[in-house]
Length: 441
Image (cartoon, rainbow, N blue to C red; front, side, top):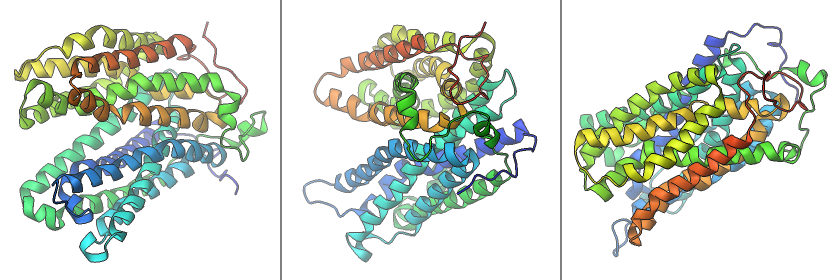
């Protein structure tokens, strides 16, 4: 299989590349998150109820949800390897195809009453496809967008990865909420839950078509001028660049926990710890998520002017200082809740906005996506994806007061990664594969 070289001499249009990458990533996030929002409606269609507990169907559905996270590190490794050998554009076409296939499979899957145990098996296969897509998408799209950025704007372009995920989450939540209001709860449980998955699959096809018009950012000329491709070994990048891989893992740890807590789980945390109503907590979450999404480009621009390390320092140290205090506030006041979540999210934006740029700038082109894909996805799966489990388990055991310190510890891990990484905001990322990032003069 040879890389398509037809686009090698074409001039890259950064804005077009950014739009295509952002739209595709937003659709991916819509499809991946639709499962968690819709599980309450379709769980009983795939998992039979138990006489001892009515939660069995939902537990089964969320067990399959977890499978998607388990698939992400493997996808980060193998799809990253694919992106380094055959190009970012082909890898992005692969990830969007996997997501479309997974969503369509869920939309069309027969129920347990129709085909028995085969139904949850098909659901699991579909979720694995979505997990593989999500695991390969973020790092590949991040490399694609950052490599397309004009000089001095890599942080700004990098920030649109989380603009895209925020828009995907907001769109998914708004669409499902409006659709439930339109057809009602009963119809939603009967057949309505299939519609968002079908819409997501169609949107993925449209995103695939849009991505076809983009330019490849990995150049064959690079390998011919001295770069060393990874060959057939997907572990080559990890073996040759272990230090960079460990740094990526460390940076992703606090960032992943922060993302899944401040931007996702905090609405549930407010309900459990503060006694806030579900409606209030959700409204607070939507408002702050909009502001958080809007803050990403500004944070990216700050990093382009002052560097990546100061932004990561501010996130890590700020999180360590304010988290125990913010989460000790047991208020149910609407404005207070917004302030609590917004402070956490604004600090987080200093890191999420530049994560793609930092990771890309620390690996050479032909090992870039495979080098960062596995450690990033593994860290997010181990720490970010388990935030609800850790928080709920501590609360059930009567140790809820220790959870803020869990966030503090993961932020310190990211701080250590930020200290260890070289400053790269002015570095050249188009050099050969053996180039090590260096601190700019």
